[in-house]
Image 1 (cartoon, rainbow, N blue to C red):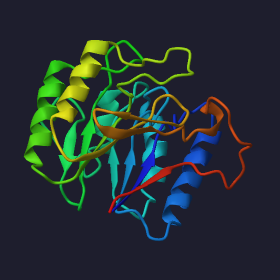
Image 2: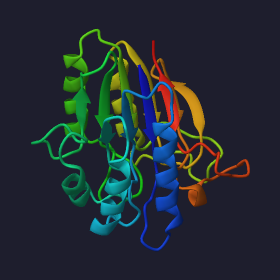
Image 3: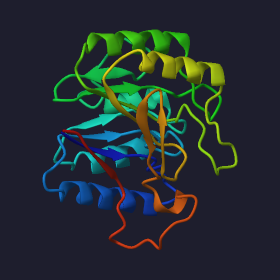
Image 4: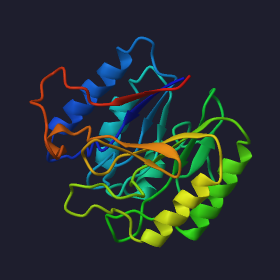
Length: 235
């Protein structure tokens, strides 16, 4: 199975280059051979949570040749976000968070909402952890991948290596994940630079920002060939 991940596009009315980056990203994903079965945007779709920003993002993301799933990041306005992407991209209603599982593919996909009120840092409250426990348990022994915006682990080399509100909540979230097998990997965004590690007995990866002007850390000189997404292939 092939999944393409997009993250941290930060569409902004005052920075038009980010819409151009997303347009190029969509073109790059559509040029993949084979195409991904699904594309997941792992948060910070918009920078200021404005209706107009989501209209731009949605118009561009609708050009994808593969189905799209979305989850919010700290810059997203959850209410406006849900209104913009309600439908197949958020395949669950009736839960106050954008959290769901998708069983349509050979690998099960679980998306976790880490958006916290009043902070750029992430959180997975008890309600979300209980829900995550149920989502993972419902998958039985089917291989699963998990996507969330904030990494619930330390990322060395950044000004604040821990990007969750509470270490206890992050550890409790990883404990929930660790109780369920097989989880093939945890995939995040948020820190605008790539990072790989292992947590709870599984690989964990963070992808860099889709908005080129917001990428952090040591960067190669960008060009029209710079890849603006990541591909995750699973046997």
